[in-house]
Image 1 (cartoon, rainbow, N blue to C red):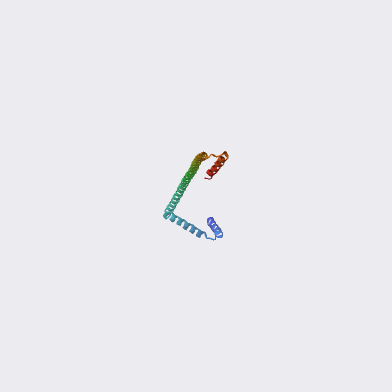
Image 2: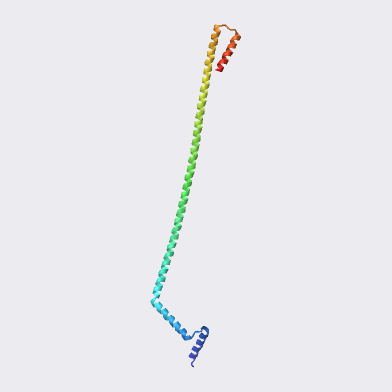
Length: 178
């Protein structure tokens, strides 16, 4: 037996012992697999790679679209935050302005109320003064009338000094009661 046959037998024994498979069976299996790979490569490999390339392109487009939408969302978020802050500042300005206007209005109302009360006080003082002058005039008129009446009584009858004093006191008391 030539050396090659012995080597083949030895390799076959090792494979049989290690794998439990006959060398011929193994060669047939390898040949069948190679034939299958060649058939798949010849008939289906282009379609498979095209499908995988299309799928990769679709995934790339979806990733790019997602990135663009994320950037757009961030931009919109920043824009909304800016608008919110501007609106917040405007609202604060309106509130401050309203507070300031309310304070001015309050001060104006207080000032007007003070002016009105001062005018009313001045009118009341003038009315009191007028009433006082009127009362003084009335009292003077009564005093003159009383003096004239007393002078008339004195002229009609001569009265001594003590009677004159009594009459004067009586007339003054009468004029004070009325």
